[in-house]
Image (cartoon, rainbow, N blue to C red; front, top):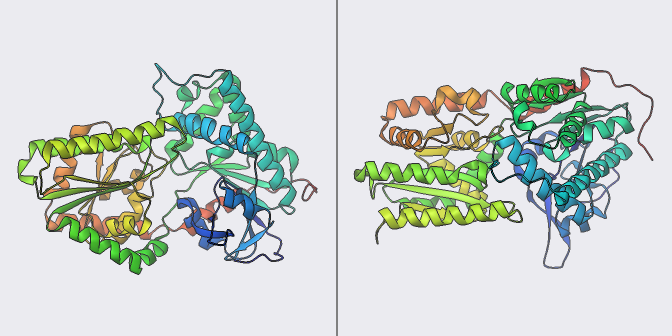
Length: 474
């Protein structure tokens, strides 16, 4: 990685998290680490052409040091990191984005108790607005005339309108990676906040979603608030299969694969790979497994549940509490059914991507049972590299179920008995049926590429000719 005088970009990608994260090396220098997040890994190979600018937020201290370099050439991507006041960012990210909007769109509120929109929350909303304005101003100052600007996700819901007010020459697309709450759920928000959110998104040239269900939730929500939706489109993100195949072939993954093989012995293997996050529904997955073990004592010592779940957003109290619940339930299931020679659940809370991919290659059953999910890339990445004709058990509330339904066992994520029966069916399925399902999954996944997803956003931007003569705002 080196700093250099870049070309002028004609595509600007805007996201909370950038395509790479930075860390301090032994000499205290800020150096690029691994690609951060599914969005970044999917987009990175498509925009490494020197003509795309990626603007993201400096999240860590190493990111902030790197941000002082200005524009950075990150393996062909022109990257700029925006250094935001930590107090503003904490309110925007922790309180509004993750404790409110994430919960809203995923249906996670316990309405008898949460949310509570007190004065502290309204101050956080003011900072969410400030954060979005800072991002919009940064884009306005950097984007060339008539550029296509692709704004990513719920952290930046106010950016489209704010940016359009600053730069009417830009074509602005907002893409929501989560579900989108319907009109009833949007009514939970303070009325002025819901309308401001709707007007912010309506400022886009077009808004995109993984499925028509989330698109319909968006349009109904805006209309319920008296805001006319912009143009919309549906384009599900596809996994970076070549990237994950490269990880699977790497020595680090092979080492992890050997470790998992030693751990499982001759047992059947159920795998889940998730962030330790409430919407992922880890607790009910363990409860379903416990139900299976209670009904089928013949499976004791013959099956192992490998849960590769890594911490996420631990600064948010609900997430830290959920981690403790997950750890306690795994311990309880092991104490109830296990013995000196067998722990039914192996809970691994380390963020180890080669180990996760090793689990993908080996699973007999992959459990993906989110309460609600915009897409869920795990349900797509796992089958892409699995070598065991593994069966996918997938929540019908995951966006990916829309197009994978014919090649998996669908479950209601709240129905522990149905999920238990699906795990049982997957373990008992004959090899021919397993192979047919697995082949169908792979065929469906091979028909989709990240490039198609990016092209859909660019096409949505270019469907309306930008107006106005101005270029970058000084």
